[in-house]
Each structure stands twice: as C-alpha cells, then as structure tokens.
Length: 565
Image (cartoon, rainbow, N blue to C red):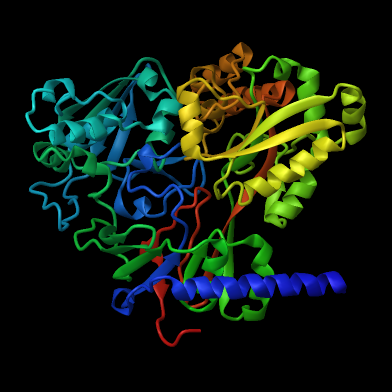
C-alpha cells in the first residue's frame, strides 16, 4: 500500500512539472487548427527526406503525407501494389523490371516552387539515380570549383555530402545496373542479377519520388541542398509552415490525384517530451499522440471515455550487439554466457510495461517469412550457468548506449542499467558510456568504436526479411552505423543471397530461416524485445489506422471539433 502511494505521488509530481513546462512552451495558434487536428510526436530524427535519415531510426510520419512511392505493401503482406506506378512486368531472366507510370499526377504548388509539368519518368529516374549517387544532370563539386563566390561552393558541398543510409545498407548500387526512361511514362530498371527483394525496397518509405524540375531549379540557384529541407512531392498534404522543434503545419494538396482527405490542416507538434505529450493530450491540446510514456498509461484510466488506444505489431527489434573487432568478444561461449545473464522478461516488464514481447527470433512475427511455432531461445536467461562460466574471470566490458528516445527502446539508459545489474550478478563488470548518434558516426568514420557491447535496435521499412537482417549483420555493412557488431560470417551471407535468388516465397522463407538460425547460434547480437506500435487518440478522431512501420494515412481521418474534452 505504501509503495502504491509513493508511485502515485511521483506520478503527480511528474504530471505537475510537465504541465508547467507545457504552459511555458509556445502555443500553436488557434487559427492553424481550424478544420484540422494536432498530432503530438517528437523531433528526434525528424527530416523532410527519410532517405537521409540513419536507417532503422524512427520513421517519419510527416514524409508519408508529402511524398508518394512507386509501390506500397498491401495490408502487411508480401504483395506489392502500384502507387505512382500503374503496372509493372519482370523479364523471364528476372533482370529487367519495366514500370509503366500513371499520368496526370501533379507536384505540389508551394511558396517556393510552382511546377510547369506533371510527374513523369524523368522524376523517377532522377530520384532513384540520386540514391545510387549516379545523377549526371547535376554538376559535381569539381565542375563548380571555379566559382568566384565561395558560397556557391558551400551549397554544392552540402548537396554532395548527402548520404542515403538505408540504400547504402542494402547495397542498392550492387543490385541495380541502370535506370532509364524508355518513354515519358515508362521506366526500365536493369539488375545485375535477379533480386526478389527489389520491389519491396522500392515500396519502402525511403523510396520517395522527387521532382526533377524542382531539383534543377534549386541547382540553378545554387541551393540544391534545399531539396531535402523545402519538400515538394505528390502526396495528399504539403508543408505550409515549419517552426523548428515546435511544429509543422501541413495543408491539403488541392491537386492530389487520389481521394482527398477531409482535414484541411494537420499540425505536427514537436515541442514536448513523452510525458509532456501525454499531458498535452489530456489537456485537449492534441488529438493524437505517439510514443507516450508507457509507464504513465495508468493515468489514462481516469479518462477512458475520452480516448482510445491503437495498437499494432511492429517491425522492429531492440538488441545488444557484440563488437567482433574485440578479440575477447570472439569467444562464442562468452557471448552465450552474457546472453544467459540477461533477464529479458524483466526488461520487457520494466521498460515496456508489457507493450512489447520478448524477442526469441530475428525475423518479426508479422513477416511472411516468420515460422509459426518458434522454438525457445537457446541462450535465454540462465544465471546459474552464466555464473559458473564467469567464475574467477574478473571480466570488465564497456557498453555504449545510444542515448536517444527510439520506438524500439523508449528508455535506453534504464535498459542498460538493468543489463549491467544482471551481469554484475554473474561477476561481469560493465562500464556504461551514453553516447549521441553524432558521436557514434564520428567514431565509426575514424574506426575508433571502442566498445565491447552496444545497445541499439532496428526498424525495418518493409516486411521482407532481407531488409531486416542484411542491413544489421551483412559483411558488406560491417564498420557501419547499421552493422554495429562488425560481424561477417560466410554461411550467413550464403543463406541470405540464396533468399534473393528465387521469387518463390516458400523457398525464400526457408533460406531466411536458415540465416536466422545461424544468427541465434553464433550470437553476433542478443535479441531483446519487439515493441508494439501504439497511438493514443481522442474519441472524436475517426478512421485512424496504424501500420507496423508507424505510418498513418491522414486522408482517412476525420475529427469532430467542438469543446475541448
């Protein structure tokens, strides 16, 4: 009883402090919320171009409204459906994909760009060649080096520094030989070899289509870097206002080619942390909130007639990676003992408050390649065996922790402390170093990543198991921000490559499950948890659907405005 009172007091204090912080924060003008709603989320990893975000970080709900892709995945299945594409065909040898495009689709008319033509094949070729770093119609830095004004050179340097982590992690350059426009509304993609995953990659949230005309205009003005900061797409909403770390205002695209939404304004509120988001929601200052503090969901019980929770299984994994660049870590028995030291069930209870499941596999349970009857994780919690292994070893290890709020790990430092405590009980001394993503990237760039373990995670862009396992564990991605284990294992590579060589789903699933078994046996990573996607919505919000990747279709939403609840 005493403990419950203490918890209630702490919750009250946190709520009060959050309320004070919210009152101090700038308020979104009421005029912007007319015939619209406010969606509260966080600014971490926000970008108007998901291609340039580190792969595996939070997916950006904003860009799903601004851009369209050639394809999308139908209802969490393996079926790829055309979007900007009208239809497609694949040659008998599996190496040529011919895509016919829809006609009459207009790009956004914005304060910074007025298109003179509709979407066509030039935009597709430009957009895909851009992520392959093969655009030849835009000048390189070297050809611009004779500019008298040094500011021009700065703009071109910024434009050329753009990286595309997801496409680099799947080695798209090694998959696609060429992309050409065979007519104004037809594109042909030639592959080096058959690849059954390619359409899934083109359906991921990273494969957005830009306006080539807009890019050329920016380049002529020596502002090419603004292609990623002042967005122009073909999606249902377009950017009207953006106040950094405060809010983004989206307005309806009057030229949208599909069914238009009923809401004229969508405000993406970025101003608060997860506690603040919940308080704003309860105060009626936002109608939908993402990534709430799951430890405070009990507060909602007092307001259950005013809200509803939306859950879906997520395509994600929180895990602890071993650094195979360290000789100590290469001992398989040591990795097994560390895994047996960690109480993953307690982590799921304490960190996720049972809004996640223990990860006994690598392939997400909702993937078409997931097995129905999953065996128990061989190296699950067994502290007695672990303690016997570590007896008299006096082992000291360094664990880096990406100290940022991520969907797959809402409290990374707290999780790290739980892992540290578990390992201390079997005789392993863990030193925790909280780091930023910027610091990690710098260390990787200089080959100076001096960790034994690193707590991280992954968010996939589609349900294809290749895009889930290859980026985080493939040989070609070692010493990279995705493969933080620096693991490279030939049998795993062989199984993964065989999974790409056939379009038969049953055969592909067989090879990917072989690859998964290799991971769970060799233990380059310890899978910890699969988090569920969750939103809290006002009961006046109708038509809300949540995809496993975190995307929301705002065109299906309606909101009955009236008095604040």
